[in-house]
Length: 277
Image (tube, one colour):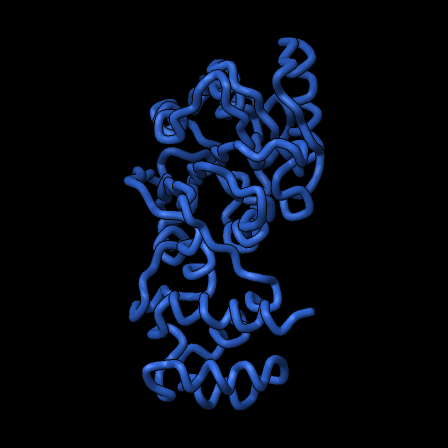
């Protein structure tokens, strides 16, 4: 388990300065590592996905559980270090991918693996777009994600709140939030400006996925969240006939996007799906 001093020592030996553009804030609190694994109920039989393994702090702890681990790392120097560690320690249950998590959102997990979990300290800058990419079949059974507290609030926001957005709807249609864990910014090196949250998401038995065409429509609508839905839809260029019918189904044409409950967005998706050959 890496301590703050050991982490700094390794970075110094590598001559490596944490890259802000890659969201490199290295976890230095062993209690948070243990908590992440505990919240994901990691077992020997599990297949786990990790995003941005970095120095391998969480990686090694996961491997100690005997699980099969797939990880994707974008930083070439950290990837080389992880590869050397894998070879030196004969970590055959670890599969490393060099690349961007946005291009390899599920690393290189084989397509026939439909039962897996995600435990990851996410680079904050990709939280929302990466989660959108994850919301496709097969869906992970459980996700334990280290995210900014503000991001956790946005992802799990309810209608009629300032944080309710398209990603709130997309995620909550497939996942329910379980009790997580608050994480102080002091648990990282370098120390970020904000506190974080271990967000725990469990796949719903009857999960629901939105089509990409509907997702695009929702994103456009929510960019104008302070306007009335009637005026927003009037300016839309795609699915105009469907949106006109959908508008009449809403409780009021003067609603704002963040006041429209998820069931109406699901109805819109069903309508759009039926219209696509």
